[in-house]
Length: 247
Image 1 (cartoon, one colour):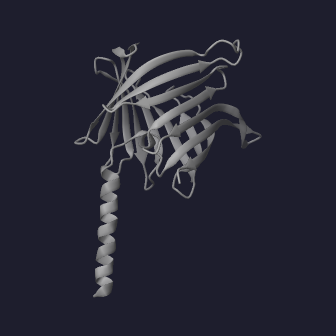
Image 2 (cartoon, one colour; image 1 turned 180 degrees about the vertical axis):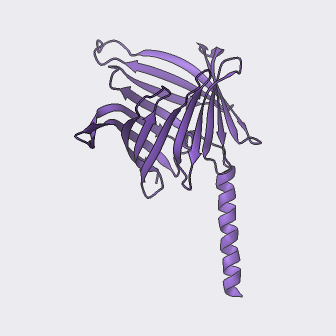
Image 3 (spheres, helix red, strand yellow; image 1 turned 90 degrees about the horizontal axis):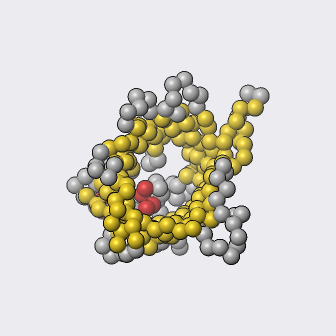
């Protein structure tokens, strides 16, 4: 009898925890596919090239850093693409009415050190629809503090377990222009991502394999990318990620 009661108590705790996790509103961590108290991620991406029948890593093609606050909101992002000499860093601050101010700086390494990096500002307004478990994002630009020009609209659709199922990009008039659909196996992370652009009969397909850390976040990801071009050969990239957590 005691064993049966203990089992029922354990089952109730598991159900309550699952309900709490599943009903939590998606945030920046959710959009990145991260779980746990993530503080920072640093990523390096390399191309894989076939040499004498063996896939080998090439040079780094992209780098990225993201910092999150304790509420799982993105506060800083830095990224650089190899073919672009400038790096870009963005600072994020948040207001009580679910608006996010974004300040982006483009850093030119060859510029005069006395000159300030060029800056641009935008405001992101988020709306969460619990009935759809979807997050809507509208992006505005303009003069501070009156951001009055709508430039982009996005919708992020999540499953009951808060796994990202689809991201849709809209015109400012609400017409869907492209979508990213995420396909899952038994794992929490997607095994495939299909990118569909309006007017293109072909889709770009990315297939993923992962190496995970103890928290269940990936620290190595191999991506096979088949572009939306007829008879195009797929390319392969490998990404490495360092993750630090809040205690």
